[in-house]
Every structure is written in C-alpha cells, then in structure tokens.
Image (cartoon, rainbow, N blue to C red; front, side):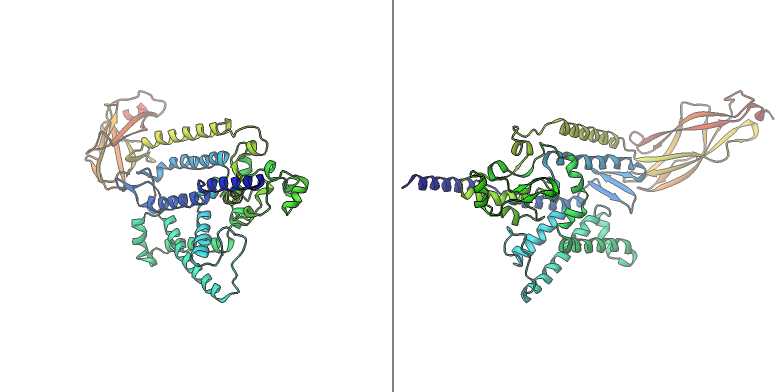
Length: 481
C-alpha cells in the first residue's frame, strides 16, 4: 500500500472519529428553541401568591414582576426592566455577536418551525434542510395542495403564538374568559387576530428579509462588535481568499477549487458551497462579516461535515476576528467593554431589587382642598384634605391614619376606620383641627409641615405609609376677631 493511500486512509479514519464526536450546532439550537418555546408558553401561567412572574396588565393597570404586583403608580420599575433587557442584549452581542437572533429570536424560531419542520420534514416541499436556497416547486399540483396545508398549519400555530404574546398583557385566566364574550372584547380579539395575521405574512412571505431589511438590530450590531466578538467566521488563511476587496466592493475571485489552488496551492476550501446553500439569509460566509448573518452557525455545521470527511477541521468556525483573521492570540472574553456591561447589569439588577423590595401594599395621595383653612367658634382652626387610598394588596383591609409628632393637631373626620377591597381605591375627605395657638404671627398665614401616617388596622406592622403635607395656620389677628 502506498504512503499516499495510507495517508488518505488515516485522514478518513480521523474524519469519521471527529464527526462521530461532533454535536452539530443545529441540534443544539433545536433543543434550545424547544426550551425557549416551552418557557415562553408556561411562564404566563406561573403565579406566586396569585401574582404572575411577568405581566404588564393594561386591563387592571398593574405590573406583575417576580410574583409581586405593582400598581400603575409604581411603574418607575419599568425603566429598570427595559435597561436590563437592552443592556443584556448589548452584552450578548458584544460577546457572541447576533446570538440572540440565531438562538432565541421568535422570528428565527418561527421560520425554523415553518421551513424546516412543516415544509421540509412534514410535507416534503423542500428536499433537504441543508439546502435553503432552493425554493419549493409550486408548479406541481401536489405541491400546491401541500402549500395550502402548510399555510393552514402555520395559521393555527400563529393564533397560538398571538394568544401566548397577549398573555403577557392579559392574564390567561382572563384571556379565555374574555374570548367567551367576543362582542364585549373586540379590542382584545382584534389585537390577537392582527398579530396572528402579521405572523402569517411575516413567516410565509417576508421570511428572512425581516432580519435583513426590517429588524433594526442588524443595523446597530456592527457598532457593538469588536475584534474579540465571537461569530461565524471563515478562515481565509487555511481556506484561501475567495473574495477580493472590502465592504460592498467585494467581488468573487474564484468559483472552483482548481482556480484557488493555481494561486494558493495550500488553500483547503473545496468550493463545495455547502456553507452558502445552507444559509437562511442567503449570504456567503466566506465574504467576511455581513450584517445579514444571524449567527445561526448552520454554515459551521455544513463545513464541519465536508472538511471532517477529509480529516480536517472546519474552515468556518464560531470564533473571533482576532483569533481567526488577525491571528493575534486567543479570544478575550473578559475585556473592558464586556466587564462594563456586566457591572452596569449588576447595578441595574441590584437597584431593581432594592426599589422593588420597598413595594407599598397601600398607596396614598394627600392633597389639600382649595380652601386654605376654616376658623370655627372658639378660634378652632380646621384644614381640609382629600386622601386617595389604593389597596394594592391581594386582600381587603381596614385603614385609618394618625398625625406623627404633633399632639396639638387632631383628626376630627373621619372618626372610624374604613374598609377597602383588594385592588380597590377610595377617596376620603379628612379634616384636621387645632384649638391651640401654633404661631403668633400677625403678618401672614404660616404653613406648618406635618407627617400623616396611614396604616391597615388589621396589619399595622407591614402595611403603613408616611406622607408629608402642610397644615396652614392663619394670621393671629384673624383668630382674635
């Protein structure tokens, strides 16, 4: 046996061993998609003490976060939630490129369900998952019937996805009750059907053009990238330079392996274009970084299979420009940019917990009436207030209040505690009076700071709030008249 034959045999043996140990990114993504989908569907149903994990309830004007319900007056938490969302995506992008797009974005998951499962595996409209460039042939009558079936199947799934989306704004237990009376809840029904129709048009007609032309994330990603950002990247040092130039001026140099070998004898790219045909956004990864790339790593799997059969590692890897293109050493994951992102995320998260932990189970607005004061017989001075109570707890409570740190003032109305149901509001006229001389000033009225402490009579330890207001005391000469 010649040395060449032995060498080829060794390569094939190594290739088989390498491929047998290889777990494709496609399989990993499918499992990740399943986990994301199950989480997204189940999350709206999970409650803690009757409150949801996350719910922005426009119907009841409440925000549920981590099993705690916050009133609309407590929506100062939303900016922190949004900061966590955006900082998290920015951090992921700086480290792993458009990992969100390829691994967790609903648009990508929906396209995989429709294209890979319904069109390819279930109905056979597409011949192979590995070829996403070849479109189904709808001139065949049987394929036209299959297309109708595919659209109907996806329409049903779109309704489920639309309902699932709405559950984050209308709790599921209310959602289905409202749907039982569609005439009385036309807005909810319209939103659900509208979202479902959009998903049908998006997934079947717009397809990956949404990622390329509509989604703003693709436009900002390049600002977040640096030389250590991990992405799907082609190794031109091993494979050879297939394209010349940079930016939009890049043009293809070679289409066949022998053309590359004539210029670069050590080039390993076979020009099979498996990495091109498998790409859902229809790009050639050998061209370099492109905003259309969603980091799905389908091209890595395709090249791994081809080069693995030759006993060689893949020419397309999940790597960084620093490691693969510049060859300046290993990718640095912990760097100034990523450390600052994580510091910012930590600070926002700590602030969110600190602010959220101070949730008040009773909200109280104290406003003075337009009348500054009233002087009764015997020089008794009264001030009138409007107290607006909101019971944000999950059960009813009886409330009353007191004046803190001022024994010269007393509450004369109301005289008894009053009850407010769970989630309900109540307005109360409160009268505070004094028969003492608080200020001896004949030139002007004097506003005196006072503190009102309101509390639940049945749970004074946990449900208590303090509010600052003023008691207006008249000029002393008015009392002497």
